[in-house]
Image (cartoon, helix red, strand yellow):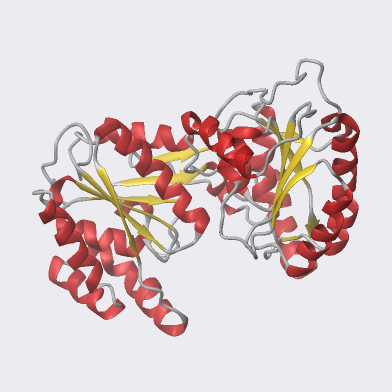
Length: 398
């Protein structure tokens, strides 16, 4: 791909292509936010068209594989067919309003639904593309920059940055303000000896957070906080089942230490940045690498809550693959499902960034006293990715 001729200091304008998935958007916003801080570039968000069923397979998977070889007019025709022509028009308007050419633009996307649009627009504009995570149809080598998590076991390449966990849009210098805002919304008790946060995910193909799990796993934490004079701030996620939320809504009022219970199915407000700023200790369910990564980025004590694990043929195949990887009969990049995430959590533990949920997590350390913060070692992969892109910006392009 020919060089775009952009300036040496990084992008002059950053476009985020979104698939409207909150975790994916958080990754893109995190890297874009740090790039904006470093370069002064504006950030523009655009939502990629939602394509379902057979059209999704045909346009994004099958024909998406051919995007890296398409000429600009072919890419424009593909955009028309996918319903993405408005993206092209919006891009031109944003560039023209700032007196910029596309050569200095960076197009970022997370997720396989948005990544093809970022690549197509970048190629048409002669700008640069950045993909977050491993794209399912288009090789990472097709993008100028690929920010891929370690647990995806990406192949080494000059255009690939391997991250530990998921980049996110948590900016540590903003956490104090966000914590104050949450405290105004849900005030701590006057006698509080500290604040703990409880972040609950939900069901997916590998994990299950059932009503029974809520009833068994949470009372020890709630009781410990009550006995220690600790305030609790609790949030569910959009994946939390209605049944699990109902049990939690019945359980929480029994404990005065619960200062906030936010049910994601009933409120759009996102309390996570405020919880990360306000709480010194965070308990996070294992189903969400994104939530675990956000908590670690904040530099707090993070404890992993193990949840229900789905069985069946899928789980058996995951375990068989893991067994073959451990005996070096298969490469690590073939790990998938629960064993892949277990390997990530084990690495985070060895680096002192994450702890298993053990009884000691329910004892208040003497050093905590009335202080709301016990800052641990922070990991900021969004900032590292932005620094990496800026450093590579002036390098010749393939």
